[in-house]
Length: 114
Length: 113
Image (tube, rainbow over all chains, first blue to last red; front, top):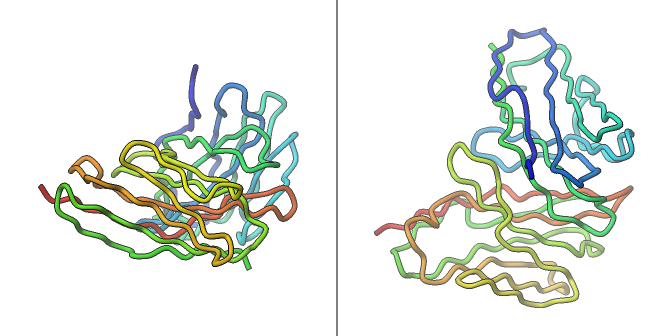
């Protein structure tokens, strides 16, 4: 039973470019949440997808957007990259967070913006 | 607002001692509180969680306590071992508009042999 998988594992981009990160949730999970983790900080909530819709959003600008596909996999897109976007991006899946379900994290994508 | 405060930011103990990490949350409606352990370069992994209908939960050397009145919860690790060294994150579930998990800033635990 595969856990949460993310791709790519590492990415280097230049300021102003755009990036797409991908996530496949754990089997049986229908909800995907994305987090940004800067070095030495806790994960910061970006947004959450359920039934192919953005259900929740954290305090991130519109440059951050996402999508969820019918098979529950998800993408995170970041436009007009800034140096401050350099971080570990974590995808977490769960089964319907209505009652507060444990999140299962992927290994993350390490994004470096130069 | 949605906030989880975690203390201390760093904690150093001798092997065999106990370690305690404390968190406070802001939304009285929160009722799910997980703890995650993150080793260097690895994903956060759930180690224990507690719901608001329970005041304490224990799993071998790890225990979590919850005080809903004070909006405060704590992680207790007894008989610490060097392999317990990692960053620990608390989190609280906020129900607004479907629910999301908000994390504390993390505690770097170092267990010295």
